[in-house]
Image (cartoon, rainbow, N blue to C red; front, side, top):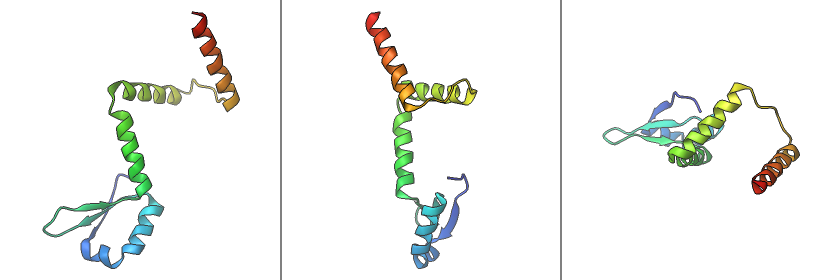
Length: 102
């Protein structure tokens, strides 16, 4: 989703709603519908909205947000090596065994 939203007036949106909906789903960009004398509204793909709400939920806890940002920094640093799912599961099992010994 880009930072720039297309703006369209209410009459244009109403006349071209099907095309506008298809555009929003394909582009992943919201469209602002400007309503004269009323607050504007945004048309956004439902799964995009769901993703945004999930992100907000995950970041709403300061502790969780800190862990997520730390993990992102670790990934972006390039210090992690790619792993298969089997390798990751084995590593987690070894960590569990180490914790039960201590």
